[in-house]
Amino acid sequence: MTEAVKEGADRVLRGVAERENGVPGVVAMATDRGGNFYEGAAGEREVGGGGPMTADTVFAIFSCTKAVTGVTVMQLVEEGVLGLDDPAREYAPEIAEIGVLEGFDGSGEPRVRPPSSDVTVGQLMLHTAGFGYDFFNHDLVKYGEARGVPSVVTATMASLNSVLLFDPGERWEYGSNIDWVGKVVEGARGKRLGEVMRERVFEPLGMNDTAFTMTPSMRERRATIHQRGDDGALVPLSGFELPQEPEQHMGGHGLYATVGDYMKFIRMVLNDGAGEHGRVLEPETVERMARNGLGEMKIKGLPGVIPNLTNDAEFFPGMPKSWAYTFMINDEDAPTGRPAGELGWAGLANLYYWIDRKNGLGGFWATQIFPFADPVSFTGYMDFETAIYDAAVRNQVA
Image (cartoon, rainbow, N blue to C red; front, side, top):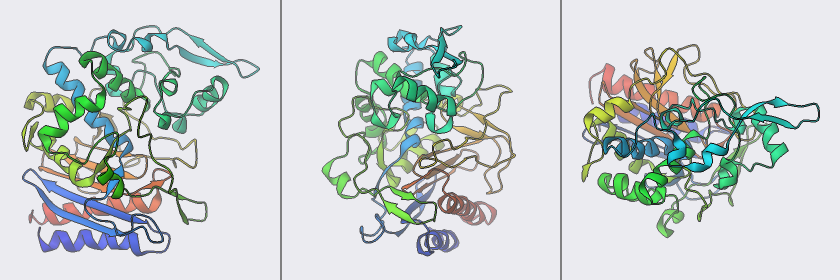
């Protein structure tokens, strides 16, 4: 770890943790293809005395789960068990029962029709199948209220039996698609998603602190999720955690992990599928996962519809962005230093990562705050990524 990296990154972490109404605590790391060259932690696991943030703190990583689920699908593709153009109903039959929302009648009753075509596995991976999230879509809030659809954080089948917002393949809409991808993996493997991940991703990568159900050791190190109020103050949601005996292993958001474990996953992508204890993917599969799958279609900003869960959110506003097989792609060079064509995404409680295959560089920023796109945490992440590039690439010290 060079002094230039450490000085710049430490300053960012201390800045967000020590300022008034900053973040309760943060863990951030950066890696090259060989290993982590920066590891930092600042603040507390719970505001007001939850013990210090440490490198081995456990986080609910929410949508950072998606890329892991994507890998388990691409392993099936490699083996010839399924194809991305296959109808998802072949592996998750329940998806065939879901219709397309056409609107609401005068009494607020949803109008639903059959889709024009089957949802494919690839459309689920690319978020073009038609599924959305209620916290980013007013119509899904209204539909959920009319039909009693619970939140996806309940990890229930009922939460997945919602509705499509458009015919499959018509456009891009971020949503519960990857939860359905997890169902596809379970149907193809005949095992629960967490077991598939453990055998085929976590063990080869040495990810011992990542799971849908926390071990006692993981729970002892868990950071508390906090709610930021309108006044900027943070309230710990001490009793909140994702279901620990979940009815469904939610491939879109259900994992708990340490930042150190997720760095091993990022390094696997940087190293073309090779892990510490074995190969996870073939190099050509990693290349395929990292390629734009939308053609000329672009992704859009995410409107904050449920204010206690998310603000309006968009990476690099004004810049065109595409979608790969479970990653966002920035189509132009980003102001942080991330080159065009590289990968990244986030988790609802303000966790963010990037994977730069060109420079062999990646990083992860973890806090536990609702709503998403928290101004303090997100700005801190952007500053962290910039600090890493300033030191590691622009000054050629990594």
